[in-house]
Image (cartoon, rainbow, N blue to C red; front, side, top):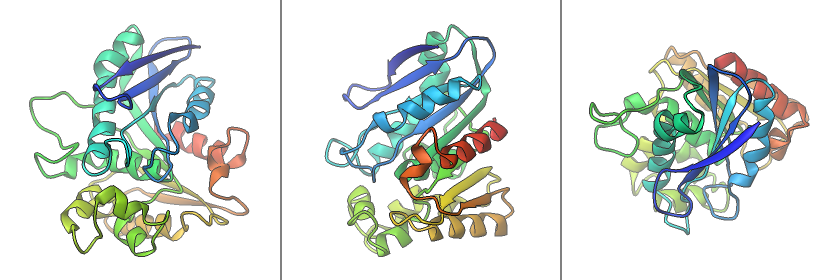
Length: 260
């Protein structure tokens, strides 16, 4: 296994770490860490998962991004993860010496990272000129799907529930009532109906992000015709999903491998 890093901006948090197994024609997994978009937690949560994925012949890109309190929040946090993914096709491919299959890229994210990973699959629906939107002049990497691990997928509901001691309001710099367009832009549930392939893995014993977040997203996505599904795990808590030795991660990993 080889490990390299690339930068996608000048801020100290604008970098990604790429884990490369042996071989050619490697599918790619984008790994997005959680931590309620705050600086307390960073890429160290994603690194063990990225390393684990290489044992399955997958190149894994763990993404760091600007978080609230250090240049992040709306819209920079969303813009960062989108830009990092798009750089996989240039500097990431260079680090891999051309071994990446850019037509086989999917994302996995935990908690706040679940919001970001799922949002990345919906980029085609974003209004032109907004963070992460697609234009005809900048190359971008489409995703085959995403695995949301206990993701915060309905930001308006999460704000009302005061998840993470007001983490969503901090991210958006306002409530759903005060900045509704920001919430619509960044909330995955607002973009269902575009055919995105999303698997929501959630522990039934999660007391940090209620499983209702995943259920509501999947219900809305399926009603809109998307191939989304929920995997509810009995006896599994929030952080179990990012323990490489736990069934919560193993189910997440298997779901990701099926997507790519």
